[in-house]
Length: 374
Image (cartoon, rainbow, N blue to C red):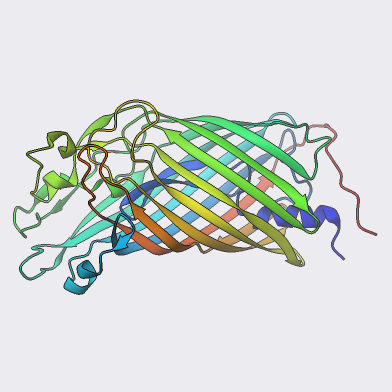
């Protein structure tokens, strides 16, 4: 029979990153978002112990080709063949270190490879797709996290808060050679905002995450918000690239630097010999208006809601997990500058994978040791 200790660890891993999760910038469909990558994986303790390190490799892949305006599916884009195909591939390396039982810090380095393709010309008869590629290192971030309650006395439930900084290390002005929307003017131009490796602004990350054991299961929840104070970067928006710059709203001809958010909550349970399962609700997207500063420039605000099943396997100091979020609601918010509805593509499915390894010399600090089940 599994011990309470083992069930505790499996439940956390199956939760797919409830706590101590790095944030990294990337694009999902035409809506820029941020993703939290899981880093649990040691059966020795629920918590990362003082002196220990944990290294994670997280992968994410999605294809977005279904257009929505507000929450209405734009079936005519599919029927006419004028829809955008937005493919996203992301690899993220995260290194986390625990300094004390309550404080840890992490650094996150993302690598982005994405594409955005639209038929050119788009009318009267859709032509071949003009594909734009964006790839390279994304925006590197660092975050410190603190457990609100002493882990020595709270082995089965706790809350962590984190504050971090996102640096504009990724290119926000990546270019490719492609034609405009009329199938003409093949030249090197800035690619769509959604496939840019970076957003061009310094950001502040705010995070709160928590978990609690409920008999054999673990309930969990998390919220991560990126504050991007910069209003706009200097990159021409896709309106310029496809040959349709805005004359009535010239600020939309330059990309915005938007805030981003992700919310997640669910439960994980042990299944069998190191295997755990989880189920969560995930909400991610871009707000219409930033918390700090103006919200000018070109952006596609909106949100997407997913139901997210997952499975994990823990062995020694390593863990591996797979999650498959399925979209159940999409909403493309009106433009904050013009009020126009616009549209954006959203993926139906997102594929997530993570490998985690824990190592390092553990400081001699007593950590909670749950009792085994009789």
